[in-house]
Length: 147
Image 1 (cartoon, one colour):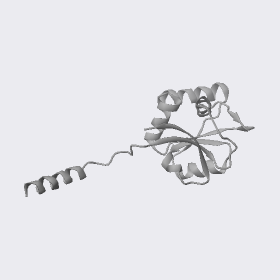
Image 2 (cartoon, rainbow, N blue to C red):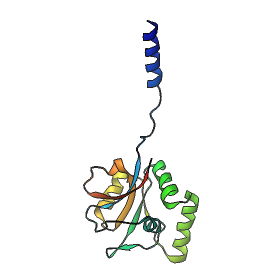
Image 3 (tube, rainbow, N blue to C red):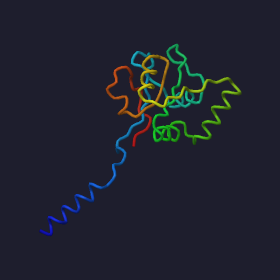
Image 4 (cartoon, helix red, strand yellow):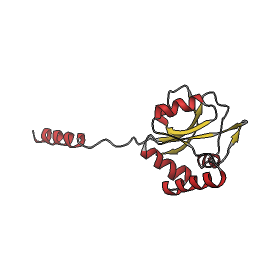
């Protein structure tokens, strides 16, 4: 009887633990399924998202910044751009004012971001792997970060 009580109590306590983020999150770089881009080096990704010109396969690439998830954006800034958000924003502003660099488009909805990338062969963005998995309109180029 006592063992059954302990087992039931343990089950209740374990069930009360709040869910955590998936242990296998991956941040991926993706393009339109029809894009001729097959590969981008990490330095090209950084340049692109800093507003600098990156040309591949005769296309001037466009960065679309994913702001749909605060954790995703934080991971992106820390592990890909290697800057805190305040420094990143200052850098974008400086490049825009000094060189006329084009700021990346900002998307707060994953579905709108996927549609925008799918419609533009020059568009490049980042998302969680689970958000682009199974979407035939887009193609993953590389994994940028994995938990």
